[in-house]
Length: 195
Image (tube, rainbow, N blue to C red):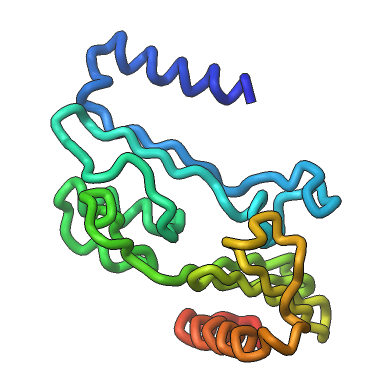
């Protein structure tokens, strides 16, 4: 962690030394987290929060005043590009699957109520995952060859994702609803995987 902090510090120091820090838009994020032993896993390619949830920190130029300083809204890395285009006033940024976060940054309501996550294991389409986070719930559909495994978590009550609710009859309606949302999203995005 110190190595990362040191490298970010070098960038910030260089911007300040050049007199550009107050004019700069700086974005800090990552393409994935690491499990680091959570769920007894030492990898990155899964849908659990330690792997799927990454930081997205934006430092705007001094003359821009965001309406928020922190948010727990559902956002995705695919939103970074349209957000940049919107902030810079560059048209036609909507030719992407992401959405601009500028309304959220300006203090308006969150921009979406659900988010989809996808992992394509290997080129043979074995060991793929699809997930949706909708409100308090996250459903993970994990495939291995012809088998599908389901995991449902209440992210608010169970942030460590330790209690799989997918087989609990009390959550059958929620599970089916979220499976439908994933399948609909897969059709909309022309997903090559078929659940």
